[in-house]
Image (cartoon, rainbow, N blue to C red; front, top):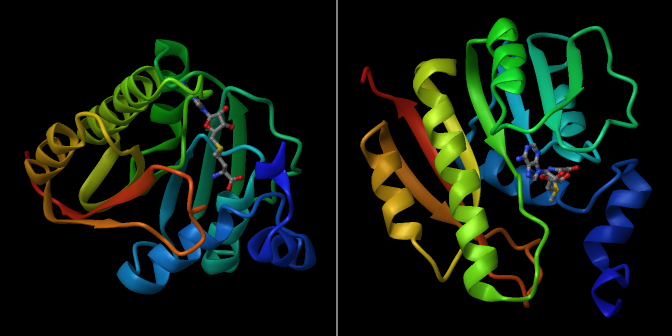
Length: 196
Ligand SMILES: C[S@@+](CC[C@H](N)C(=O)[O-])C[C@H]1O[C@@H](n2cnc3c(N)ncnc32)[C@H](O)[C@@H]1O
């Protein structure tokens, strides 16, 4: 597929040892919103192939902890302050595992459904994933914690934004430079989880 042609970010990721170019989206989010701090416990939802977790571990520099969950098994060897597991975040068993390792200072979700090319279907599936992650913050994100989610635009993203506004002091949207021009994804960043 033409879409897979290595571009500037894909080549940079290869050079810097990241398995996916998506790392530069989180890098820009971190530069703008400083969501991750040393010592944080971070949940990475949809973590495979592992770039966001790797980047987070670099920021944590041996402090804190990263938990990664994905439908696909991880091919990365976790350091002592990380744990990656295979699971579907809609399943109670995955929630039980992430609950045991929480609560978290930050929840990151770059999770995305397999796209069908049908925009209505794809945005609908993305909406369900985002809603699930937002609801997970109620039990598993600490007071004052931060959330980053990937949202497909063109569906019910206003509803998602409202769900976040009910839970976070500040909610911003950012479409990082590393998002491919043909992609309809963007990111919502919620900081300072309220006491709900
Ligand atoms: C774009 S990739 C994430 C890339 C990752 N952030 C990185 O930097 O390497 C999206 C991931 O979301 C995962 N995903 C989709 N639905 C999921 C679900 N219900 N539970 C867990 N992971 C899911 C997919 O398996 C896929 O690996």
